Length: 102
Image (cartoon, rainbow, N blue to C red; front, side, top):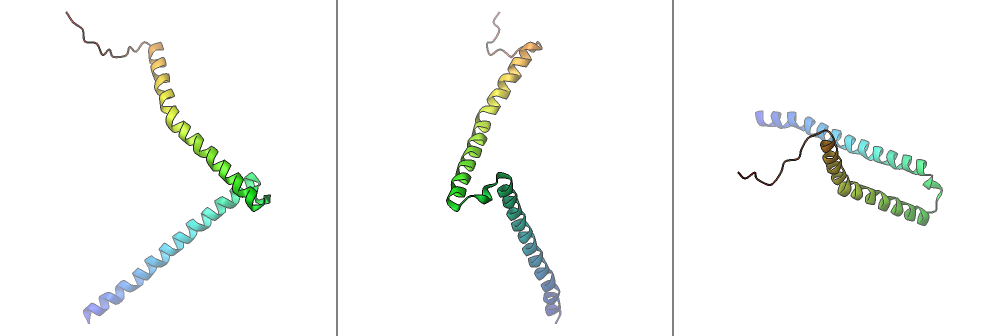
């Protein structure tokens, strides 16, 4: 009898968790749809035909990916070079790799 009472007490929390998870997934899904709608409005691509939309989206994603890749590859190099340049200007000497011999 005691075991059945514990199971009954656990059931509402399980269904509540499931319902909460379903609501969170629905909110995320609605938010993604809203972001896509905003993208369509900002780019005015909602007036394009379907084949034009696919071409436009392909070009947009390609350019965005190229910008991200370029930033990932080249920004750290430029930051390091700028740091070395400004450290030389302000008098910080780089550590030498050659050991001093007497």
